[in-house]
Image (cartoon, rainbow, N blue to C red; front, side, top):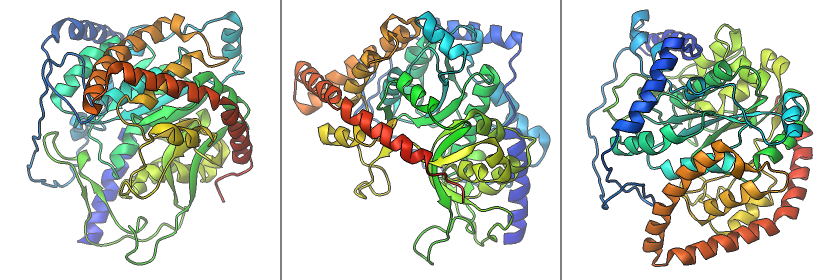
Length: 499
């Protein structure tokens, strides 16, 4: 039975791999339809939403409501349907799903990229400064964090593909539609929501769909693709990150990883032999998604070496093209294999980068340029970064980004105020796109700060004073950060990942 189950799972995943990476095709009729849909959303969604997440507050909330509703529906694992027609209705992988992605970039004019200053525009046109494409994943209760992150990393020369987990409650989703999606700039693309389960292949599939969407809609004008979550924040302005990447070797990609070695018996999950099934690929939206662990093991691979790292990367254009090429040998084979691998998003890109095709496409270096604090106190999750000491460690690390932040607290607010005014940064306050997204952030931030002040028994003025002090501290850290960044770039450039 175990062997038969493995064969069925393999067939299932091969079909999935081919379908998962199909490019988004949007014709003129769909473009017109999406434009009309966006206008309808602006005018028709009017009812107030009453919801409060832990450490979160939303615009338009008239009274506090705490909901502890839970869905205790039992999980029924269905046999995979290998009929090609069934894919047309699959919420995660079908071409219909991809066509329904909210491609506002195309409907509002994807060719429009306003950059301040003729000199900077010429630099970008000449490719002397890399362009950055972001894939951002957010989930339930992260709406403030998402808006804060978008505001902090926004730049008119960047592009953004944003995915919201479909398990987000309906009320929160309505706020997202009314207050965020219809008001963000045209270079922010909203992917159709799909269910995502931590540790399952659904996280990897959303990442690949985001890559495919950016490449299809925006072409090969982007040089690096970076994945983030709503818990992340930048430590450098976008132009500083772009200039740092311009100094890197050609076709460079950055991620952490090493050849995977099975742990001792019973000490950890045996990823290469233990089979895991992500139920979010086959269960309905109203059911509770989990990971299933069927009985029996599989053999370790012999034709490639699996790698294990962390799920964060900066991909070169060439490696992103390989990862989204459904006709290529290694991407299809590896996606089939890692579908049943625990936390495949921490291994797929690393393994692909170290195949012969991956080595030809890009050179992978052993650094993802994130600052993540692991103390063990959070039971398998990174520590929350709070206070000057936490930020001092982050800025002293030489990283581009840091995690994990919550809500729109003092640290996030100070970082947002710091980014537009950094030395060498384009005058973002004058950019229409930045003005749009900052207006969204400001509305959310006002509500959140009032709730935070009440929770901490402080006034909003007191919190704003703390933000100013934190901002001053960040500015004092700039010389240390500059030296740390230079050192980290040099170290990363001397250490390739693949053995």
